[in-house]
Image 1 (cartoon, rainbow, N blue to C red):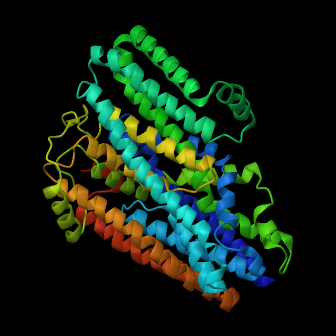
Image 2: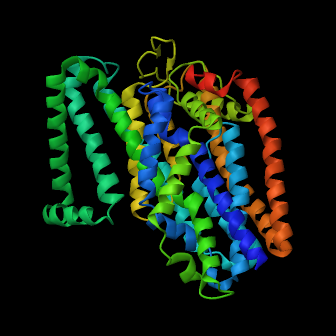
Image 3: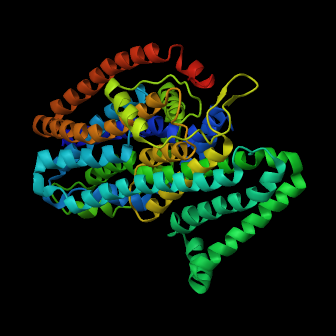
Length: 508
């Protein structure tokens, strides 16, 4: 009983910490586009995105079920074994996310959660305890979402750039092409965010049955596009210069809000589901029991979901979150020279890819700076495509109850739009592309670390009981301190200055 009580207390404490770490690492995915385009100051963007994260967290239940009961079979475990698995996930997850954030590396919180559960269940309860078909379906969904995000963002960016070219501030060009482009973005966001991502909400169900099922999806979407196009055109006509200047900036901000909402809906499961499942198991007071029912059928109160959303939003303000933002922005920057880190082998591989790749001049507008001297890494058109495509892919997956990776989807959109604009041509192209190779390589390394580390920690916690919990906590804090020193030294070497200064100045 002492083990159960202490495990639940420690699990809830680490739930709070893990929510903050998820927000810390994934902050870049939400604000990098609007920050890179200088559409909003980073702090204002984080406030706005944070509010959307909190709202989206209240709709997280379908995804929560996949994470809580889908990866392994709870019916083959005792309560003690299940609790050891759940809290071991937190011990590894908080350290893994903290370390990647400290080095400015975006990592998938979804992939970490899934493979941490796999490692703990496999090493503690056996290979057969893992629901491998479910793991395979989640992994497939992650890879498919990456491919869809990258390809869709490339194609959409090429079409939109072909229409607008570099005249994104020219009134005649935007009057001609701006309305149908924004109409397409708004239709896409409306369809995927509302009618797919929130399809279980009562009023959304009534609209779907009353319009989409009655008249057909294709016709209704076409009418939505026509309606949005007309509205945007009228706004541009009556607002003249102001509407022209802010058109794609507003689209980028709206896309960021939708993306943050989808993030809160999808990624809450990564931080909250192990701890809430552990609490449910402890409250049951059962030694064995039907753990499948206990882990999945007990409803989660709205206040708990909202509280976890607030914790995730709070993590977005940390200095390490700014490191992730800066690194992602510079990886897809239209500036030729940036300050990034990539191992030599990644740069050499990038050099080979560039040597055999197509040779095109950049299609992006000329690199520029703001009046205060801050670099504009993207134009607002590209920022709007990044956020719209990312939000649509994540919302669609959330509506189907699949916990896909916000990190992978957003990073693929940055690379896809960058490739469409041919920003990987001159200057530090090998460094930017090498950084992308390094990030993707770390995505492959992280699951292996998650499986092995969580399997080891789960055995320590289960077999040593209470002393094992305290040993795991000490290991977590000790390794956290070790990696913090290494990461701060790395940051000073490659970027210099403070995190706040580097981010606010545009940080090459």
